[in-house]
Length: 389
Image 1 (cartoon, rainbow, N blue to C red):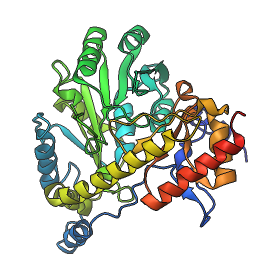
Image 2: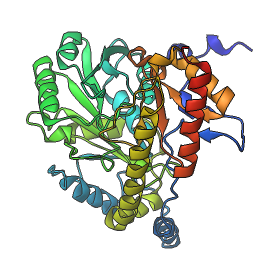
Image 3: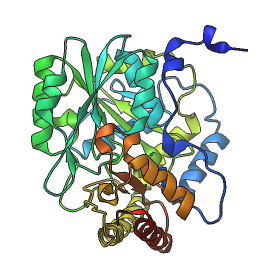
Image 4: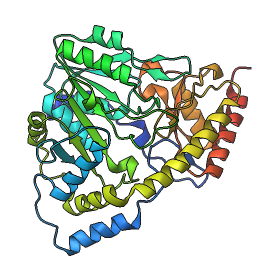
């Protein structure tokens, strides 16, 4: 039966989902650095907290969020200099993807425009299309270190009377950039001047390298009521399968977010109690992950730069590397496809994040050091075999 007659037209126009979430055939020789799923398991105290909450009877409706969890979130975000009211400024979500969906659902009407940078995380594309919004892509630009930065004048130029918001990610997936205070202030000037919102994806806040520091968009003057800050436990506590996240916004926007009709499919109540426990005593686990990711980044950047035809900038944040493979002389999509077929190594072609990222491929450093060493040896073998002669 042809269902197109009955389907919501936006669904038909959306196309495929994120390439990093596509299933691959199980293969013991495969090294999968495509999806950003941490290879750490969440600590047992978190698992026990879920069990204890269920055992204590915390298995009933909780429509506005568990107070202990909301208070723990407010205490956590305060360490970045932003005080929020846990009772009026939080929307509890089942992960970052639902936070994106709710944020877009709260503000986007068919025909509205939302500015997405290029490159940008693939998970923004389908929700925007689903709500009938027009995605206006603005290319980022590389600095002298090879890192991608927001082009604020180009963003301002891209705004029209139909623009509702700009979507940013800091630390950024896939580029690894961490926005500076100067960049955020410039973006704030645009938002205020054009009377638009900023949806700020902040899920990698705990993974920043060197002397860089995370600055919440909401902390910038004038952005207190213009920012929807999206957060997730997926990366911070290696919690990808259990779905935990939240959105911080003004009381008025939080009401809108909570009114998006998603049904009772938010973060399960026992996991909210576990979330409170994680925010209280999970930081030793986070430090352990951060130390290991730093080792992987140091090794991977150095090793990739040793391969002729590849240039890899050192990321300021996240646990991804986004090397430039343009000198190999092969389009990013083909590079990714052939690397998987020939070498059993999976990465994410840059063009999946936008056309500006042609000539790049993203690798998630979600495997042990010996496996990463093997992965970069495979890349070197592949480049020597398939690159420009």
